Length: 178
Image (cartoon, one colour):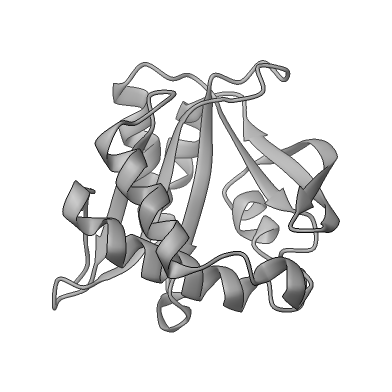
């Protein structure tokens, strides 16, 4: 049994643990080790404490707990940050621990997040994914369309990132009722 709930400040360290563990696992073959070394539990804890204490851009975070109330995944987002593509909402992060991937739990988080975004008045949703990240298939599975690609800097390296989007959140929500 899994539970999705809004994150609170005291969750910051556990979210950081999931973030770093998942990030290093997902990107181990995508991002150079040197560029990944800047991502630590300490700096991610500080980031999530800030996000949960003083959210910017209407950002909110949902966590996924297992039956032992351990945080095993999370999703965050808010207003679309670039204002260049005609989308009003954006997924900033979605991570699950390795043992919880490919079990439908990413979809559970995505569904809960999409419902929350709709409640907050968002009509469309964008997400940026490193192009070589296999997770892009996850978003396409739920009907996201490719929007644009850009070069981003991580550490000292440059990588391509692709935006996927849903022009209508309702189209995404309908994926969960099909």
